Length: 112
Length: 145
Length: 179
Image (cartoon, each protein chain N blue to C red):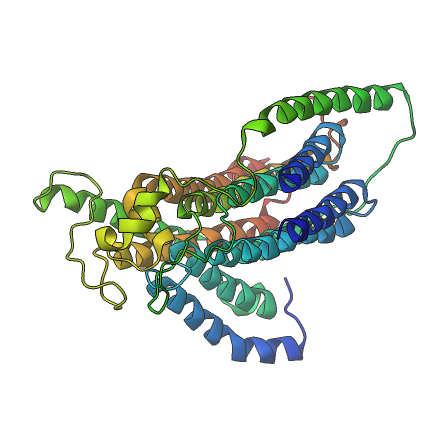
């Protein structure tokens, strides 16, 4: 159970980064760290002690396979995380072109 | 943007084709070994990204729009949907069914329509990643005010 | 296995904490690579080779794009001194974090111990999955046959993200050239 607590502490570190930092790149890094902790948690749940990877080959009798269902979910989620990060970075580039800085305290003025 | 030094260019000449072939191997053997469509598509995109980064964007004759990769990505997504709809008309009245015959487990040609899905998902993932990379790294220079 | 995974997650926490407090943005990105590649080693230890291949390639591509974005714009971060707003910000975020930790501690008693997973739904997948789909790779069989709609949705999401990135970076191109 220690692993679950450490994984949740990683999630909290990412949440702290999103809430308190005022540089756009640091906020994107915080989102990315939060997503990684979710992937780790899903992969931890499906693990069986002394299990093998879920691929069938001959020569093994009565193997105990690790659960393939969380692995399929995490495979989808990794690609979705990349798509989210790419869109956040596109918005960050637009904000830098218009305001000249990455600081979110200075993007308060609506200049149209 | 400029290319890199001579050593990087020579090593890229040797390695680029090998990485592309490795990506194709991961895509087509997706139902036998670990990998599949998404992993293989990302590796193929990595081979093209290596080529563009090592030689600079002038040498690779890139036009100033990324229409070609967008067209490849749209066409492959359309083919996936057409393949999934074809299950409606081949006897079984269920959308997204596995309707080709399944051979024995372990041969290269087996598992119904899963290898065909792997190939088209791999092409789509590679084209989408390449479009994102081109738009964010290389083509943003012309939107300067 | 559990102590090894705990040590790896501890390294990832240290790397994430440094990445959020670095002065130089390029150092912060390199420290984010610690989190990404530590996750690859964790996936290999948890007997999931598919996830390790996807994570290592996606992490490399993400790092390349972020380094290009940072190097083409500003590279440093302006740190302000301690004033009232900053202290209030940190205290309120710590209150939220403590509340979430309390909720998690309340939830963790109903999880199975690590390593003993009762495969309620996956018994059918590992037992009869190979004959039902015909593929030797069970993860690909689950991903394309039992859970095909999720894969279709994910291909659509990747397509929409590529479309969105191209649209955001091309808006008002003709108006800017005219004015």
